[in-house]
Image 1 (cartoon, rainbow over the protein chains, first blue to last red):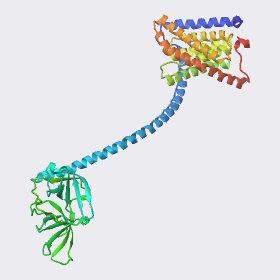
Image 2: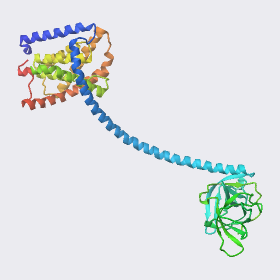
Image 3: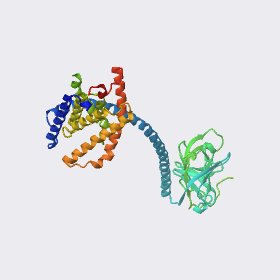
Image 4: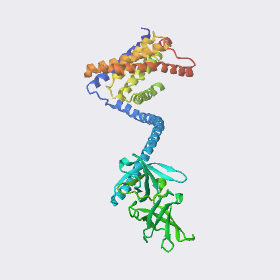
Length: 279
Length: 173
């Protein structure tokens, strides 16, 4: 064969193969990599392996960090979506919580009084230049009659001025058509609370000889049989002492914030009938 | 002489490198014997003694680092080299697809030798693993062989201004 032209080459190959086979046969039984030469090889290979390993690790770490950052962008986008979703859920829960608080206040009022109440939700407002009525989602089918008082949490809202089967119209006490028998809680001086629109209410027919101060609490007097006695209406906000005449002109700030009214309780057991509304 | 002094270190470097690449790419699921490509290249380019010693060192280092039976891969590597050297007399090394095919064949042969060895001497039945791992490895190594040859040809041109001829045609075999 032309590539074995050199006799020495053939001898060398034969010797090499013989050495390999000998080494192989010696190691067949123990199947171990023991011995001085393998140890030396392994000793030399270890630092090489360490260097290469750390280099590869740095490169792969950088790569994985890059991939991680790519993933982070996607994850960030998803998390923002999740946060938006949770924010909307939180708003719903907060609404529920606030509603529960309001209903609890209504319930407290209901428990404190010996009346039957129907809780109604405000579904609309009929605001005109001369009228500021409120629409609620309960009507005669729920026991609501014309003229019955309407309260909310801390105080009086007004009275029902017209009810259909499943809705009713509330005349709020700030409506200029509303007149309610009231008294000053501290002095028990009686007068009439009349609606004054955006100014709240005015307490009328209080003689100038009576002791009324700013901050005095005004409550229903129970006169006339429409409104139960002792329901809070508001506080005296200003007294116009310069006005001429026999009576003070007293401004009352309602305890109810009508712009934020969402639920009301309607007194169903009150025996309405007497007309206190001047139309 | 410098070649023989550097050979063990280069062999260690190559084996460590191929183990690491296989570990990174395949996560230890299979090995990637890039050293077979070097052996085929050596069979095509180097003379018999130089190539045999290179194959022996490469195989021995492989045995030492991989923890297999000492001498097994030294034997297979030398056999692959001799086979390549023999075939190089008949194969046109410029044809890349032949290089890929031949390398694929060499890897397969080497794997079968290892499988048969373990079956005969240790009773290990590794035949079920052949289709999944061995063919895949042979395919990958065979595919990489033309790339290696192409790069080495560029290196040869860079250092010697022209590609080195096979040992047989150079008359050094």
